Length: 196
Image 1 (cartoon, rainbow, N blue to C red):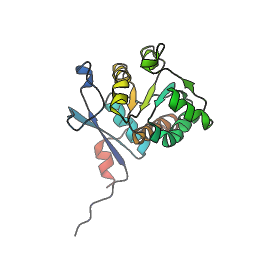
Image 2: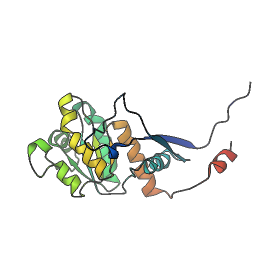
Image 3: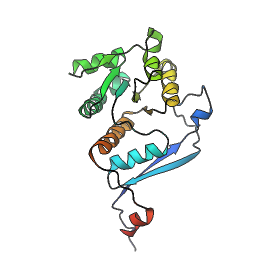
Image 4: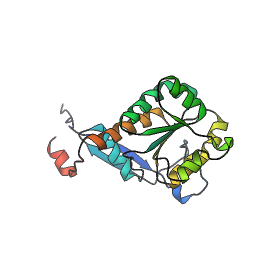
């Protein structure tokens, strides 16, 4: 039996969705969603492979700025590590009241930002004004899905990297770290496959 070769590189595939062509449509993925294509990032390093895939899908990772974080209660412990890594990479953090209180209780410097329903200025105003570079927003209930719709739409309109899972946020941090700490390498598919 012939064994398949083990590649020395990593590939990250990202689906591309045409959300910007459908104003008002929620960007939170559901089982009925169909992508209009896919892109792939390839590199020796997972962080760079992820960053390349994100750039190819039209949501390049930021190198700095402010990260807006609003996560459901069960995601807060895992979010702490993501936020600490973002701060080590030079990001400032904004969060809604519940998430901000949790982070503050664990030693994180964070600015509290209003939810849309809490009055202005709120998070969508901050996104519109270019004060946010990255969004991490996980939700659990139908009402929280509706509450965060305007955040997702405005992040899309601004072309911001937006993550609705902690796994995605972790991958984004790895990508940002790769961008900031190592140089971009570009190789052809033939070069990658030559090493197999």
